Amino acid sequence: MTVTITAGHLQATIAEKGAELQSLFDTTIELEYIWQADPNHWGKHAPILFPIVGALKDDTYLHEGVTYHLPRHGFARDMVFEVVDQRDDFVLLQLESSAETKSVYPFDFRLQVSYELGGDGLVVRYNVKNKGQEDMYFSIGGHPAFNVPLEKGLRFEDYYLAFSPKKSRVKLPLKGNYIDYQQRTLGQTNTDLSLTHEMFENDALVFETKGLQSFSIRSEQSPHSVTLSYNQMPYVGFWSTYPVKSPFLCIEPWCGIADTLESNGLLKDKVGIQTLSADTDFETKYSITVK
Image (cartoon, rainbow, N blue to C red):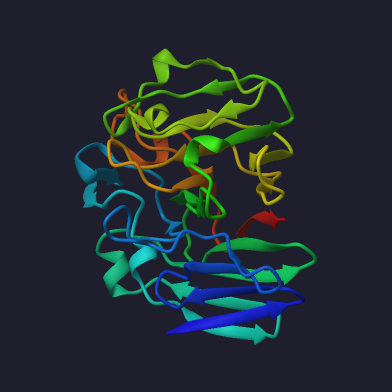
């Protein structure tokens, strides 16, 4: 099942499975901004990553002496959310812990995801509540994929990635599925970055971020662009498939990252993990602006 919301010239479609954004469509110019999940390339649109971001070593972690197993990016993207509130331009979806989730993640939680259209874009909000009596450890992130090119007649290589603010950011290189934290360097994000498929030869480009951030996919040959912005996410990933050359680019705002090569497997010690006290909430959001 899906839910469609509208505001002005924009229309967004969200699936109950995974609370996944499936479409962001401009009805005036008939332009789709979200990747349409061609399984020959990548069969998803914009999965939500929870309760981990990235991969665990051997898909395994330890908590209070017990071993648990979670796949890359967690389980939320594969579970059906409940629609708990809906208006013309807004929808709120919810996932709560269950016997099924507790078998792999032993915390009582409530995850709410909302989508709200307005102006020239969409605001995506995450709210995580710890319903338990002990500290809860988690990560959460977005994985929206945008069509590149955005219009016919252009190529992936006709686009570039613009960073704001234009300054260097700490780059976290991947070695296999894991972060090689000891080899982090300053990445050249102080200038526009021309898109090529080869730039993803070693998987995603991952950077640390602080404060207000904005990342735009643009082309000198088109008036149409898409921008993702946020103010409370400590990491961002950029990804497309390789060696399969796919016509999309993911801009991924994260509160968490994959295990580092040095990870000891303890969830509470995981680099980038969020800690939420009993009966408290965590909130963050990002926005997608389109032209």
